[in-house]
Image (cartoon, one colour):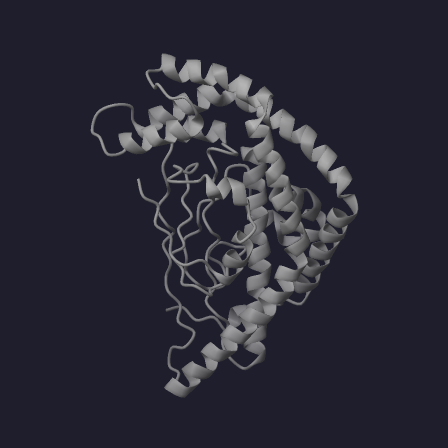
Length: 325
């Protein structure tokens, strides 16, 4: 099963340089938790859209991660703290989903700032695009309850009705628009990247702790029950990565367990060990937050102020300039 990704957006590209480095290094064809990261929108497009199809794009809302709703962040000052802790320092599949929801909301606010910048230069707002579909991590932060109910696999990308802000422009006007759009994206992303830089650096440190828990004796002992359980289900594998190698091979065969059956076996067998691992990560995160309290607090306050001030300056004027294709 091959997951093909289009070029990331500017925002996505800047974050993934640090985002979950160890977990992403291990994420081969991961059979993500019901959703694939389908980067179907061109590079440099920053919009995620809080309303999932609002702002006159005529888009179909994208599927959202289980347990997460990006619309909850329309008043970010009331939501930022818990969301940022889940985004920067996840402890479970549920935590990762909540953090991803914040990431979409963060991108939505940045998108509005870019639109406002472009409009201030006398051009129509760039096309608003859908939130990225949730991408789980079934090795590091598996969302077992979702897998057990829905299986492995990916949702189709959301249908987008294209909006062309340059429609009717002359060639010189198109060039001027593109230059303004690029300038606004660069200047805006610099502000937003600066706000999350400390958090992303701390996130890299957190992921070192997470992978240390994976390699520790307590979790490795807990995995003995997982191996016995999978072997009893007819899947003779020694570790989690071997399970996904087996699952990849099954995707090319007509016989054997289905995707749904494999996900059910994986979720059921990993459940007891995952309870142990989640607890270890929760304990470790408490100590980590205490050790980095000042830096984390400053980061949260800075992001909260940025989101609040940006949202306060975002009026409804940009909606009126959007045209349907």
